[in-house]
Length: 408
Image 1 (cartoon, rainbow, N blue to C red):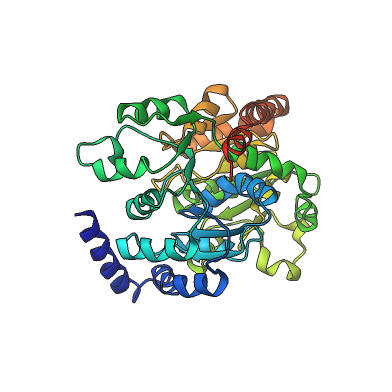
Image 2: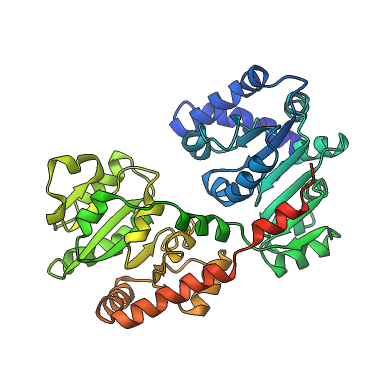
């Protein structure tokens, strides 16, 4: 049934690609995978294979990838993505020698892929468990680990119909999970080669402090004002935050908003609802950005640096159902954080709310009250920022545990 479903999925994706550009990129990209691999690898090439579902998993695995890259310089790194949003943004990453889409999980694709790549070691990040690839890898006695894994009891692995996926999990030599609950769940299906190492994202965001985060245009925009950064917002978030911006135009507060989608429709929806002076990243050379109240980031790749300028951060995704975005990125800079109400699937959010550095709001009134308090009480604002900064430091160290395990 699984294999039949994959073939049906392949057919459906081809049909949908006529109407959806993102799906089209994925279909066309997967069609080029084997050619790309054959052009860059030979039977003599020693390889290590990294796989990520999308951009978030890539960022999560990056500190591990970097350590492996430095340690095993004689190997070529093959990095695969399933999602176009990961591939398109990181297809030129220096962390890998070859970056491709992962073909759909058919038996023939798995055989052909592994015939060409023949990895000495494989690292999967968090999830995206593909049974045919993993089972074929195990039959060939290939070594593989899963890192930063996070399991919940309602997942297919733990249901009566999940035997195919459970078998795929058994292909991993070792699984590094984020929390004790995940380890306990795996034990219920007789998987015991498990270590609670934590989340590699804590190491990833900590590395951001070692970089130069200066952005001169943001320094000019912020000047001496208090700055609220709205990161990875969706329309549900903007429906609350934009009225707050308009209402508080007279305060010495500036706003930076970085929407998750930067297409023209999304940006237009933001600008048409703003009653205050704003500037777009793409048009800032035509305006005096110091005079603007709102800076709209209609580009990608600079949000992690922008968080270093935040006095308060609002992180999007949890006001609706699309999923909370990364709250660890602003937390590492010692910033108090506000999120929406739908955060139950995100253990870091629950923990940070318990610690006090993150607050959840569910409507405009609660958002106004929380922002007003953080703006008006600087001592409390700074204290909550320190709580978040300390939380990040306390949870670092997953990468060292993983790298200590790896022997190639």
